[in-house]
Image 1 (cartoon, rainbow, N blue to C red):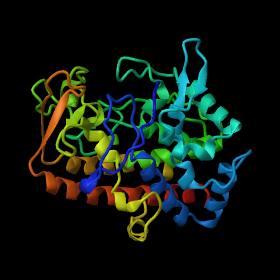
Image 2 (cartoon, one colour):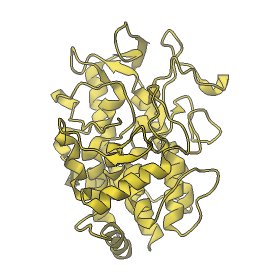
Image 3 (cartoon, helix red, strand yellow):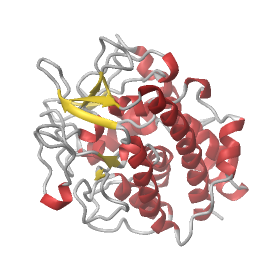
Image 4 (cartoon, rainbow, N blue to C red):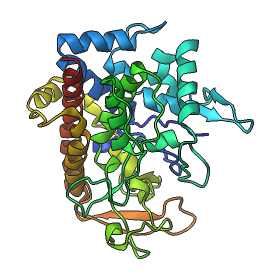
Length: 362
């Protein structure tokens, strides 16, 4: 069963749980998604704010804002498919902390929405990152464009019709009363569901390892999958999930993607003054909103170049779960650079989520 792992801060000496072999992608952890949502809450204009409040609090939901809504798309990872083909929301009694960000959606009606969403989006494609079917909906969180590229293009390796950029485009179309453009295989029931997707996926789009990826040959040297027109599944880093870092916390297997998901611990899970100041300085996006997902993916791809700067890779030794181990030119310099990048990206994510909703509901 696919489970959301609640990540604790790793930067500047904090500890993180041991990461198991990845079964899905979850940018920022719930704290980071709440930060992005909280920034957007503060930047919404009156018309957009009214629409957001109305949609998020339909039915028996109440008191839901973008900060509380943003983790929703990770909460649906507690929906499991059983052998009889039925889907159920399952709480792990040994890890009740997984439910912390999901309590706003624990009514029968909201749980039913999550189950319905997963059932509708499970088999529109196949996703088997660990050899087991995890459901197409788990591919909506990421796109793996090679870091040799300087812009997003749907013809590139690592993209597909059910990736992060496509999912955002589909949700925007629903909120704008337009049909989802083909060939994107998304089932979005209504505007509330589209808003729940956007509240999360715009955060994902600003986590560098959810957009840019390093591809390696069997010896750990970078290769360009667009030059060979293929991705080798035996050496695929799975967006950094298959890259082990034994430096951050010795004697634990922590993957590079998970480390990037964790936000600086001093930020908490709300909008700080520092981040709000940075968000207000994010320049407006040119053109129409339907072109923004590609533009923003390009921007994050360029940031991913820095995320992989100063890193080298080598094969791990069995029985390690990861395929690769990372080495740093200068580990402390890298940590400081990561901290600054994360703060900028969280601010941009919140600013752009608000910008998008303000454009849809001017």
